[in-house]
Image (cartoon, rainbow, N blue to C red; front, side, top):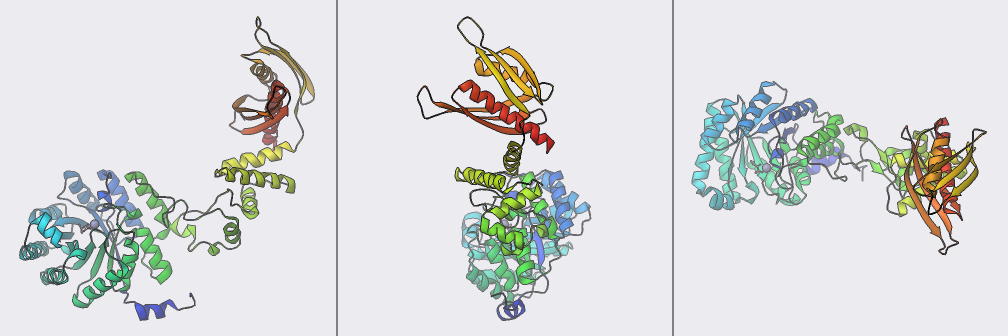
Length: 511
Ligand code: KIV
Ligand code: ZN
């Protein structure tokens, strides 16, 4: 399929314009996302970052809407960024005056045109709508503004009236005709029809502003561009009213990679910008969001990881670096040996074949239990395995217990620590606690330990059951290690499990 030359496809199926303008409306439609409100300062920071990646136009807000919106537009304009700063205005004189007062040079003015908007919202006749739109465009032009006009709900407007409105505002001096799919009802074929029609009847540059109610905003915008649209309205992360607008990062990457179009956008900052906008708006991206989601370059299955390690293009359409993202190899039940080897290599952990097999099987077991193995889990499992194969530094040499109704449980413990025998007695709330207190005391010159987890299971029931004790201990540097022991005596199993984990911690320190 890819031996078909994209240029011939362009010639046959597309009417691509030489230049596509990226009109970012994160600060206007994006801010209309339910629950999102940005401060003036936050808007300024986002505008600076949008400018830094090279978007052509930034719709900074709706100055007539509030004092804060006005201030944000004015301040962003005063930064003298390379991007053109746009403000939204209804087709009314007051709104356009706010654009002028905010020192903006470019207005995006709109009025609803569909029967629903005419009858239920504006309660205006078709004639009044046209005259209102024309007056607004003329007023803005008379005051020296660049004018982009939108017929709100254009895609649910009758074809004849659609033509009349855009035709009249064109004659009134509009510079750009923007076609909003206000409630996201377009489909690819309908988009094709509509934009081809608009391109054939109007001489002005055509812009599109598509919403994502049916999940088609990116696809429809792409088709509009294929049909000759000159500009696309987009937002970072696709935020916007309801289900949002066309995501900038998706459109730009598709145009770059699939069509070889250079939009002069610095794509290497897309991931950090997505994160930034996500943080300020509180709208986090789902893990499977194209381009910027956490899983956009994450791989778990053994087959995929094997391919990726040989050549990342096998399972990635673009490199994570090209959008400032990073690749993640996830360990779990689908993990293959190659993925594990590459992770171990990344952490400079050398395991022999037997140790490797044990770690591999532990990861699969955890995966089967529905757990995702994090990098920290892997390090703990692998280092524990590595440590357990080494010498025992602290050995239990003796244990005596005294329990009874009239006395505190007392344990006498004898340990050999690096070849030197030491013994002490301690009390505790029970015999296990007493023995652990004694161990802690004996090893205090070597390390401080905390018991993070203690798990006791009886193997095969009955009073003669074997005790299977599993512990996780940590030292004062935050290192953690597991320990396990099976014994027919609960106290003995507990002490041996704790000593097992202590020995592993000591060995880890030497690695
Ligand atoms: O979606 C829409 O119709 C809009 C208008 C303000 C253009 O955002
Ligand atoms: Zn919109």
